[in-house]
Length: 124
Image 1 (tube, rainbow, N blue to C red):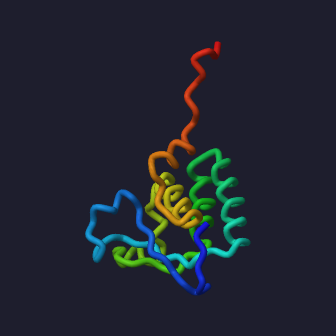
Image 2 (cartoon, rainbow, N blue to C red; image 1 turned 90 degrees about the vertical axis):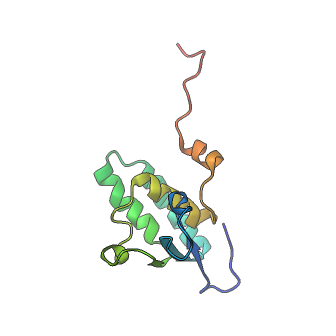
């Protein structure tokens, strides 16, 4: 979990899919650094969101996760500026939650942690 000396410090996060867009135009989420309690609450909420049985159930859970520590956004079209999470795919929400909680965008090794393990070759 990233730490900040200034509790009001913020950081700017973007999705990997937006990395090729120049920084001045890249859709960016602005978050303050989480307290330990917020980080713990976020993890509990993430665990609940992963247990959702449908997309309709999952979306509000992931939105609640992403609202923890959220300050604002930059470079979003005006119609999405009030709720930039509204059009996100669940996979993007998972990616952003990881970045908020752990301080970086997921890499391939992180993504593999969230994938289902392959069936055992010895399973019958």
